[in-house]
Length: 279
Image (cartoon, rainbow, N blue to C red; front, top):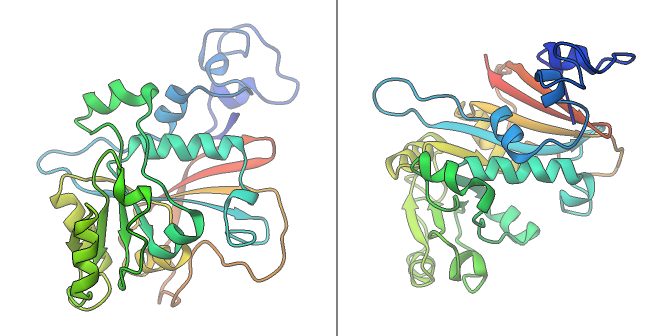
């Protein structure tokens, strides 16, 4: 993996024809050597994707999304994201989870991707403890109907209880079934569905200020429309799929497109890993 942006000694040292050795060169101990075109270790990835330092006063929640897309805009192939991913994408996926307090995901994605509880990673244990985090992030499932299989490990054997984000109009019997399974139901809307801004506030109220969403497209579209997304981490896969696969975000078109700024751009094996922040 190599860094393409921001341009520093790291990218200069990795330019075609650049020689190792010397200050910042690939053969040196400087930044070029630390971030050469090789597999980065997890500490390097964690530094590259660190959440912003909280300001004074109450920590402000920060919501980032992590999605993958092909060159022609497909967010999945045959209903799943794995076929358009790669090993480096999965390392980043795992790192982003390890940095987060909670992973917010839509119910359809839980069903299609076979979601399991987030696992504790020994490599991140000390950093999570120092940050006041538990051993693994909670999974928060966004659902209006609570049409979920509560016998799955996501509900029966998580390290931390799975959260259900739903509206006040959710069916009482499904709420009771979720709670019997050990999930914590969080009401974040007055009707059947959630209000995205209220959901973010509710998670922050539980102490979850480092938020990560992994979609799916409908949920991401809701978050974009509500203007609660702070950061987009997008893997651009060098593949073409055609077909009718969804984009990374769906739902109604926003009235005015919200511009994001490029924060960093990494590359490995033709895959581009962009990090964009709200401007």
